[in-house]
Length: 97
Picture 1 (cartoon, one colour):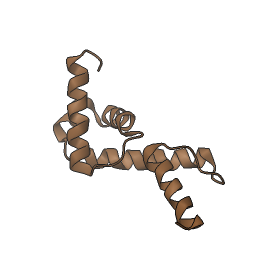
Picture 2 (cartoon, one colour):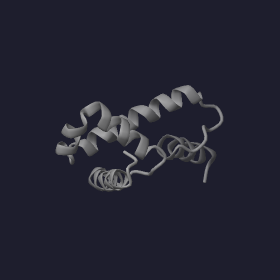
Picture 3 (tube, one colour):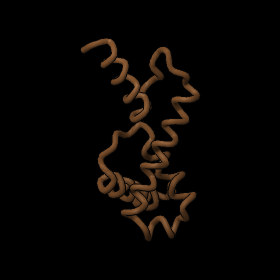
Picture 4 (spheres, rainbow, N blue to C red):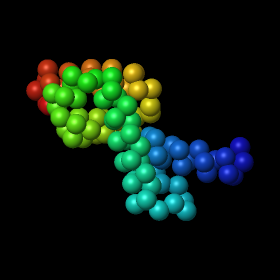
């Protein structure tokens, strides 16, 4: 793997899975981009869960989804929505939500 390819892989890993900030990148800016990507991902999942989103409210849904998704690799919007709803249901059943 070339140096550039490795740096690109490190950057994507930091943005998608919460891996450490690669050398040469501003951690504050990197986290801002990560937060933006998480909110976008939340919106994609919300379209698959309109009733849950309406029940929680868009702000709370986004907050809970982003906390759940941070550090998790994307599974696609449908799979993310299903996994998030399942986790949220488990948390409610255990009295944690």
